[in-house]
Structures are given as structure tokens and as C-alpha cells.
Image 1 (tube, rainbow, N blue to C red):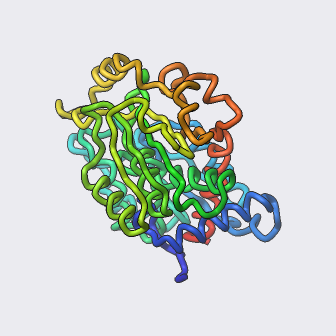
Image 2: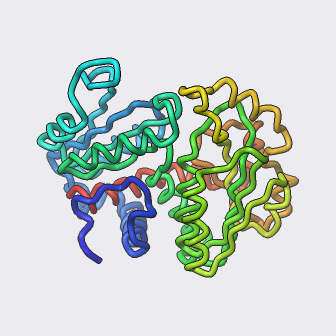
Length: 336
């Protein structure tokens, strides 16, 4: 495998399977030898910039811990604290900001979701514009299309509980109703990376909650390449049959930006009406004693019941921890 030094990570689909597996294997080693001197000086005296358009809990915590445990430092940045050019204000262009940041730091992470954009794809375009001009690696810390760090953390959790070879295991990616209008990023990342690892993927959602057609086309190609199954169902129970993994999460409709801005209230109102779309114990009994996973934060009582989310087959906390380890591996491989 060629060196990953200097590589951007916007979507796992843009890295080879070999590169993804090498990242996962390093993350697993870093978890097993968390404070080993082999790793604690990898980013000594270096700074990773974290550019947050949207707030977070796990993302900021895990990246700051990752930088610290590698011997470096993570610096929190917000657009409102920087003079950046927008359609309505004067300020630094992306080109200028990216080139200056590259003179200071070893890497740049960007998080931009839902209400910070006016149309699907704008967050992805912004991250790629920074990557175009930056001379340091740019990592998506979640944007409107993809969430590569979450996708890797999900798979790391599945490997721990189901074994390193996930081929033939069935993932049910199921929509959950809830009081949060969420972007497509974690869901699309999940079905992309799992299909590349040979998992059978069932996507279950109500009518009108379709994901990005280009992403779905790529998932179909991934499944065809690895002789895996891909299916879509609009039944809230059918997809659970024989599932090895259940990933229940709310996501928005394709019409969330029809007005030119994010219609959060309208999306929540529509979602809350679909009460049959909750992951509960009765549905989980239809599975192959499936693991339950979720990227968090969980809308308990809507996306999933407490009985399942806190049950013996839930791996939500393992996956949350894995964000730290996969991000350490990504930073070590691309920035050290």
C-alpha cells in the first residue's frame, strides 16, 4: 500500500479497501496499546485545526483526545470567530484561509451540517474547496453527504463483535422517526463502507425518504462487485428478518431544502407522525440476534426504545469509543 501521508478524507469510498482495512487494523492496535510510546509522540508539537460550523459532543471530544494522545494539540475554530468571505460579507476567501492554515497546522477537520447550508451538497462542496487549496490533509468531521470517521468507527465495532470478515453479514439500515431532523451523512457513509466490505445491505424507510440517488447507485455497484445483496423496503418490519446488524437512525426527506433553507420544523413534524418506524424488542426478535448500533445522539423513545438501545446486543458505546481510535489512525497515517 502506498503512503497515505497528505491524503484528504471526505468519504471512505475515495479510499481503497486496502487503505480502509489498514486504517482499521491500526485503529485496533492503537486501542489495544492506547498509551504505548510507539504512538504517543506521532504528532509531537503539531496542531490539528477543527473548524466547526455546527456544534458537537463526541466529534470535538474525540478529536481533541486523539490529538493529545498522539502528542499533539487540537485547536477549536468557529466561522463566527473568523473573518471569512460569504455571499453577503467581505473577508478571506477559502483559498486564502486554506493556504494560511496550512502554514500553521498539520491537518484540518471541517464539520458542516443541516442548518449551516441552503442546499444539499453545499457542505460537501465547501470541504472539497478547502481540500483543493490546502497543502495539509482535510478530514470531514461530518458534512451533509458523508461522515467517514463515523463509518470507520461503525465498522470497527462490527469487526470486534462479528469478526474481521464481514462478508455475507446482513446490515439493516432503517429509518427511525424522531424529534430531530438529521442529515444523510452517517447513513450514506454506513451503506457505502459496509457494501464495500461484502455485507448484504437492506435499506428500510417510509415512502418519501429516499437518499442521494448517486450514493445508492454506488452502493449497488459495491454490492455487485462483492457479490452481496442490496434491497430497499418501505415496510417497517420486513427488513429485520435475518439481520445481523440493525442501525436505526432518523434522516430528512429530499425536500428539506426546497425553500432555500433548512426546514427543520417541517421535517420534524413529518417524522413524528410515522410512529411505526421505531426499533423495538419485537422487531429485534425477527433478526439473527442482531447487534444494535447508532452514531448518537439517540432520540430514545422515537428512533429506538431504551430496552434495545441499552440492551445486551447494543454496541453504541463501543462505536462511540471507536471514533477516538479511528481518528488517531487517520491522523497518524495522513499527518505524521
